[in-house]
Image (spheres, rainbow, N blue to C red):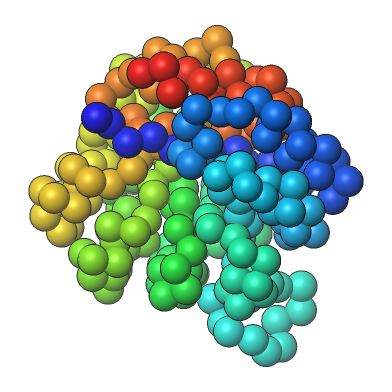
Amino acid sequence: MKKFLIAGNWKMNKTSAEAAAFAEELKAKNLPNAKDVCVMAPFTSIEALGKGLEGSGIGFGAQNVHFEPSGAYTGEISVAMLQELGVGYCVIGHSERREYFAETDETVNKKLKVLIAAGITPILCVGESLEVREQGGEQTFVAGQVIADFADIPAADAAKVVIAYEPIWAIGTGKTATPEQAEDMCAFIRGVVSGIYDNATGDGMLILYGGSMKPSNAKELLEKPDINGGLIGGASLKVDDFAAIAEAAASL
Ligand code: PGA
């Protein structure tokens, strides 16, 4: 049976009080696949979200972390700080962080290593811009990201990473990649991972699609063989929509 992960990415949305209310409503949905569902909150809302989800089996996490253990890094958050909150997941290398906050493959690689060492599951985002896709360079671009992001990470550690393929042109635009485009790239990424490591690592890797996934298109994306779930932005802000996507995965 195919493994799934349905991950919400709230981005810069929801205060602690809003996170607590969301958690209560989501818990009340009694999702059949709760352990395959997680929500990534802003740092300040993680604690309330985690408390609210207690006993539900639903995971929670952060959207970034710093790679140094402590020190003079004003405004940053360390892995130990996340561990203390009990986070299970952390989004790394989201295109918004790469574009607006100078995240590079080098910092992504360092962050992957500290998260793996801490036992927090990284959700590594990769994906090309519209310009790159229009020039037909999407596979080269994404392969380059995957290879650089996994540099010096041994197979046993790589197996702990979740990859999210998020074409930048589909994020928050309402313009979803077609199921075929999403499947093609997720299958391609799986091949790249197999090439770096071995077939077992590639076959076992969870590869999500992200970019305007919503209840109306979730099933056709999720039923594709190489798509193991979704990283969901806008639609994760509404409990009903998010739960409907999780239920679509549970039905497959
Ligand atoms: P979206 O965002 O679902 O709002 O397109 C996805 C993401 O950026 O993770």
